[in-house]
Image 1 (cartoon, one colour):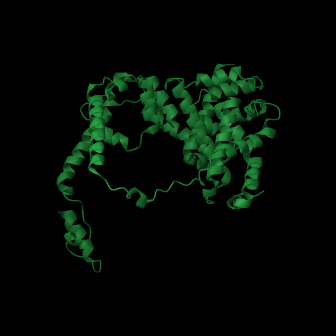
Image 2 (cartoon, one colour):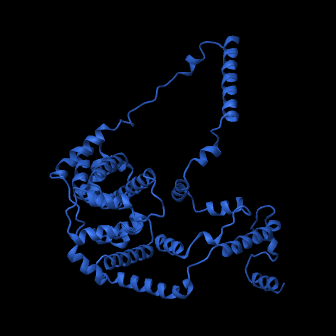
Image 3 (cartoon, chains in turn cyan, green):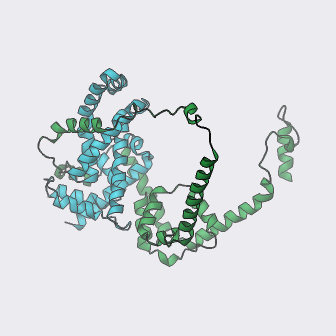
Length: 181
Length: 227
């Protein structure tokens, strides 16, 4: 189903619910995994995904078709995740100097819903040593295979800066793998 | 002076251009030129003070060209869509994140989201109560009303005055109770790009950064994490 048709149906009161169901079917899994990779914990991701789509329901009417629908959804999801992680950091009084995101690392090791192999676990641990922005860029490039142009539209960052972020992220992950061999 | 002559010569060739630069249709704010020198001097002071209090990691400038070249090489590599060899190997051993979900999670997610949407209070259909203006003017104000209003105002004023001047819970006290990290964190996320200049102006002479505050490692870590 084309995004334009979903948006058109949503603008009509009589087909709004149908349009929203179509949108959910099309994007819920993609957005869930984007959120999950950022917040690690399934329950947090579950809460967030509901908040995100409630926001989508409220604002889709004002969505302007000059942007892609999925980049708009990603932007809402990313902002919600960053806000959530910042609140969590402040709540747990984690120092800004602590880049290790130790609470996320702890969640990863204690999570029931992680059944990755050794390499996947090590990759996630390495990712949690990265600053948030590098982690975001790496996730979107590595796992979701998004193009730099698309990531740029989602994050509002220049393509050059994204390439540098990805480059730094790759170097740090490689270093992490070498150090933890 | 020579420059002025030069520009005037140039302007003479332009049809309809006034000969005297003062006749040009541009205006500047009042006192612009009288305060310009002060502004420039202030700017120079800020720049030189900044240069004194900030330092860069050892060999920063020696290694900068190679790091820029490295970044250019990476951007070129990124343009050819070729991933670094480490990533290609990693995609074989760790193609996905390894996270899992409860059985049937996505089957129920649709319903959960629709339920969450339904649980939201309907904002659009809510209409504010309309209070007719005529009704409010139905009872003319009497002197009792004015006295009552004055009593309430005096009571609130007195209470507010004592709260402001006799409480130990002042702004400064509350600020002292907030951990430094929280303040830094707040500023990190809520500051604007122009705040630096305003801050500099406000605290000029008060704020003197001691270069011993930051180690090479801290500066390197900051630079590495800020791109």
